[in-house]
Image (cartoon, rainbow, N blue to C red; front, side, top):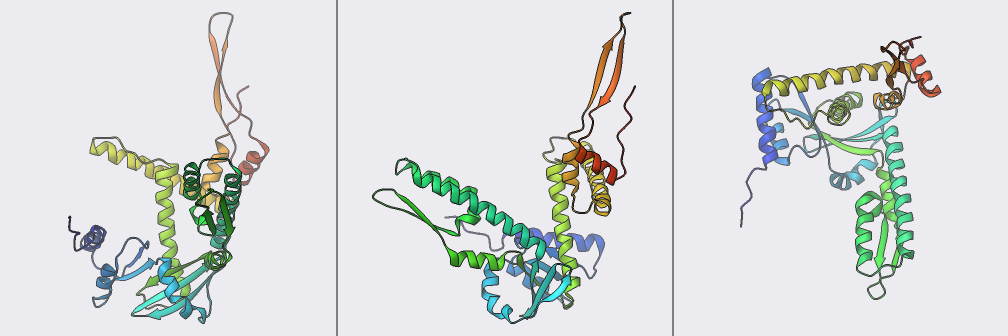
Amino acid sequence: MRSCPATPPRAKTLRSFLDKVESQYGKARRVWVMDRGVPTEEVLAEMRAPDPPVRYLVGTPKGRLTRLEKQLVDKPWRKAREGVEVKLLPQDDELYVYAQSADRLAKERAMRRRQLKWLWARLTKLAAMDVSTKERPMKLGAARSKAPSAWRLVDVALDENTGALSFALNRDKLRAARRREGRYLLRSNLTESDPALIWHYYIQLVAVEEAFKTLKGDLAIRPIFHHDERRIEAHIFVAFLAYCLQVTLTRRLHGLVPGLTARSALAKFTAVQMIDVHLPTTDGREIILTRTTEPEPELRLLLDRINLALPAQPP
């Protein structure tokens, strides 16, 4: 039998990181904004213990929301910003922030409907499919892994004797899911009760997560196969420059084409291609003309809105 360490590894990592930042940049009234999976209860207690305490704002698992739901019902909604409202619940030297976002509600509801529609069609097909009693559970497992959120809203049963599949929508679970869509729970030891300020802190975490998503996804900073430290630093530096360009494009789009992300704009620009046309002459030489594809009407409109023009075509 292998004994478990007294202190979880992530707790040690977080403590060492906090100490490193403080030793390198000095003490300050920082606010540590963390995802719900980063700090443990022990670490949060340590952050509250000093005088003054180390201030934090951290996401909270939905299991805690179940315990606090009754206390939050009677609390009034307070506007944090346009489209965002919060409820504040002080408890045990902490402040719980229950937030609801109109944009997040629309996004989560669309995702749930899309998953549920796909799962319902898949279950209908499986119920009519002539497969063995051993094969059907495997197909159900594949459907569950592809639509886990929707699976929790459906009661699925297999007849032990015939292997017949039956399923029905669990309306109680659906109503509970609808109540929580677009809503999330934060906890903090901040003494400020200004919803706008708390929301501002949390949005910074969202921005950092989006930056990492861009670096790892769009710009493909990983994997790094260099073995020389200078090459690794150069790789990251080039990726950082690319990220700066992407942020610049995002800001420009925000002012000129609201609602269009840099990721979507770059996807539209992939339709533009540049080719070299080689034309042989009668005296054995070759003329090379660089040509670009003509943009589609949608892309031409985008170019006009952001005040960009493709290079002039050669004669």
